[in-house]
Amino acid sequence: GEVFEERIFAPLGIENMSFVLREDFRPRLAEMHARNADGSLTPMDFELPSPPEVDFGGHGLYGEVGDYLKFIRMWLNEGRSASGEQVLSPQAAAASRDLLRGVVTRGTAKAAEVTGYSVGGKTGTADKPKPGGGYYNSKVVSTFAAMYPTDAPEYVLVVSLDEPSVAAAGGGGRIGEQLGAGIGLDQRIDEGAVGQDALGVDDRAVVAPVGQRGVQLGL
Image 1 (cartoon, rainbow, N blue to C red):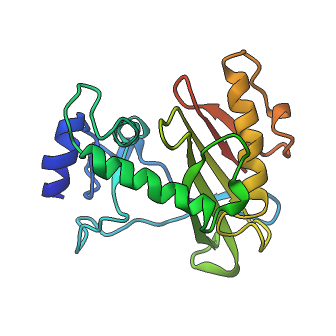
Image 2 (image 1 turned 30 degrees about the horizontal axis):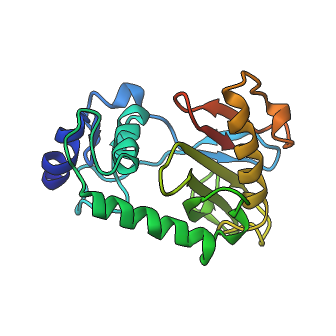
């Protein structure tokens, strides 16, 4: 946590991100929910130990969306913060983007390749939690976070599918379909024509602009 604070959070102006669930976080803490068979959501009584035994690099941070976007923008801006401070070397930032491009060209998100775009991203599949605790054995939630074009990123798109088909888990199938639909919608943002009907998905889809460029999709 101290390394993150010194080398990442402070240079980026991130003030509300921590491995510890601070008391000033609690009034704004988002509850975890499980989706029931009828589509409704049930709050779950779930909380990580605080402080954690180990500050993991892959998960466990509490934070705000705005602060997280500062990190994402640094990553896409050749490793520089909004003020121009070099947080990550340009070489490391470029190497990271190349790795994400490889996820689409030769990895788990091949179905997300869109002709004419250099899409890169990361897939993720998590066991779906049960309303009463524990996890389902055969139900998952799949997510694909994408950026494009990878050589000079301008857009970020996140697609999350609740109980996708087996083919879609891990970034295939409908993940690729929704990404393509999202890119089409993304182009229409600047034209002022944003709406759920542009996605061609069911009524549970949530569409929200992220800044001036980018779309977040959730089902």
